[in-house]
Image 1 (cartoon, rainbow, N blue to C red):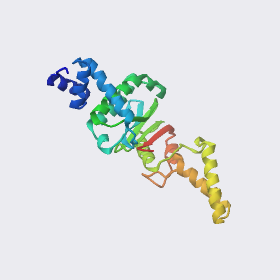
Image 2: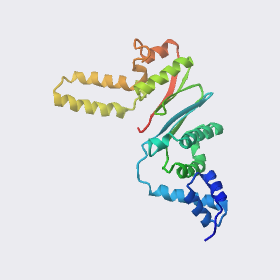
Image 3: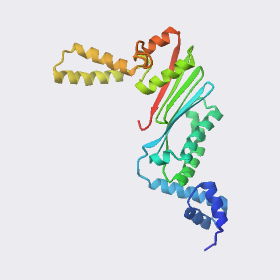
Length: 261
């Protein structure tokens, strides 16, 4: 068996973050060649990843904006302990920075960094010993972009125009709290209302409530899931649409992520 110098093991460990035994075995397989040993470490990481069955339910929601460009993403790992590690946090920041640096216009463009993601997921696995999933990423750009991040657990990205940033920030916080699904009634797909109608109709039949109440329940459902029809949490005398209309402002889109949804 080839004898491996301890300094070479340390060097490989510093590069990959892998354990001492994995580094030593990889160097033995590669006859002491550091470049080939890195490849062996990655192969070992892929092999271990393929054996992992535990569901990834922990992780981080991260949101960042740069001028009129915003990105939101959710990355999952297996344990809360790993999600708080500096390596895991750095990985999420690296992904955001590379997307901003390349100024990707559409989420489909992110496929261009697949090699970067695959390689670094394996490297991260070798450091934290947990599988990592990039669950979802989205981009909003142009006009006024604002973000809100609540303890890396809930993130909001919002795109608007003709509005003060401090008000838009509060609306982003409102979205984090009140969980709207759509901006206004006309943005709701038919199936959302139809499904709720069927559910409430069954409930009414079972409890023999007068059917006119069905319309009230549907209306309440619509108000609950539309941003514009919600009472503003910072001033519940006004609905969001009243705040927006007062300044002739526009909200084009918003994205809300909650960890583990």
